[in-house]
Each structure stands twice: as structure tokens, then as C-alpha cells.
Amino acid sequence: MGKRSILAVDDNKTNLQIIKQILEQEYTVMLALNGETALKFVEKKRPDLVLLDLRMPEMDGTEVFKRIQENPDSATIPVIFLTADGSEHTESGCLELGAADFITKPIIPRVLMSRIEKTFELEDYHHLLEEKIVEKTREAELLTLQAIE
Image 1 (cartoon, rainbow, N blue to C red):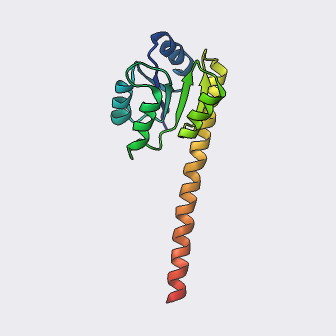
Image 2 (cartoon, rainbow, N blue to C red; image 1 turned 45 degrees about the vertical axis):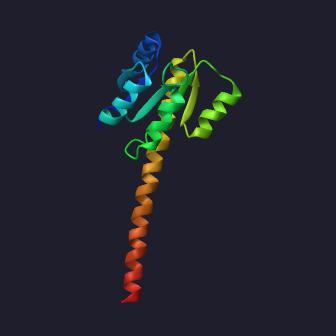
Image 3 (cartoon, rainbow, N blue to C red; image 1 turned 60 degrees about the vertical axis):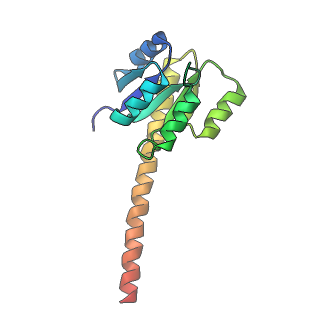
């Protein structure tokens, strides 16, 4: 399996460069300066995870998130919100929307890496459980068919 890809979305070029420096050894990093560009990346490149700034001009992070969620092809991509607003209300609001996680700025490299790793770990477990459910459902269907015959 190749490097996982992460799309970082922030209207601040410095923040994007910091994120890229932190992540580029472990991940393929794509950068977007606004929501519109981010949605195009999601549609064409389908990243494994999106780091999404909450406060951006024109289209804020919640709008970008909702559009990602509305598209069946991208709805399962985990999104971690990034923001300088560390209020409890903002954090709980993002998590209630369905975000995988929430990180406050300024970005602390070890926290960013840890949260991304945990998100990917949870995604891997989720996929494994889905595979097991499909497998067990098939087994149950076979047993049912055998019992009917």
C-alpha cells in the first residue's frame, strides 16, 4: 500500500506550508487555499483524509464539509477540522456535524500526527469490521439455504 494522501485546506499559505512540512515524510500532501479548490481535489483525487480550516472567506469549512458529506463518493472521507477558535461550543459543533476530530491552532506537530494516526487507525478498524459483517452475512445466508434444502 502506498502513502496515504491528505488534503490540507486553509486560506493561510503559511499554515499550509507548516502542515506540509509536518506531514510530507509520512503522507502524500495536497494543498488547497479555499473551499472551491478543496472540493475539486476531493472529487478528482479522493484523498484519504481532509484537514479543513473552519474559518475561510467565501466558503467556510462547515460548508465544504457538508458538500463533501453530500456526495456519496466522498462521504466516507474522514475530516479533521482545524481552527484558532478553541471554544467548547465550536469543538462540539464540529464533532456533532460528523467530523472525525478537531485540532486547535497553532498546530502542534505531535498532536497533528497523533490525531491523524488515530483517525486512520479507526478507519482501518471500521473497514475490517465491515468486511467481517459481509463475511458473516454470507455464511449465515449459506446456512439458511442449506437448512431450507
